[in-house]
Amino acid sequence: MLATPTLIKRPILDTSGKMLIGFKADEYAANLTDARAAKVES
Image (cartoon, rainbow, N blue to C red; front, side, top):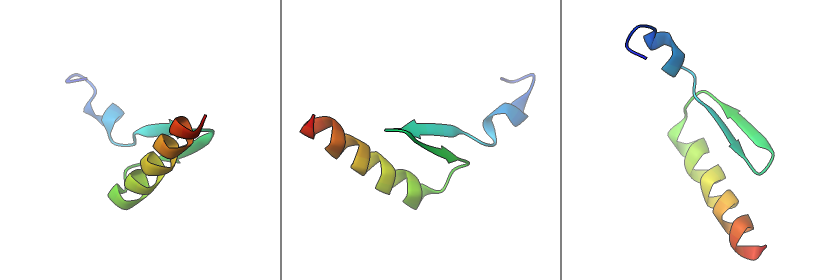
């Protein structure tokens, strides 16, 4: 990663079929909370 630091500029998060590209703290928080709730229910 030190050789190519651009790899970490746009993280990809896959939560219960929803893909988030890039990082926005509020979107991550909302989607991770939703994903945890779905996991607990199943």
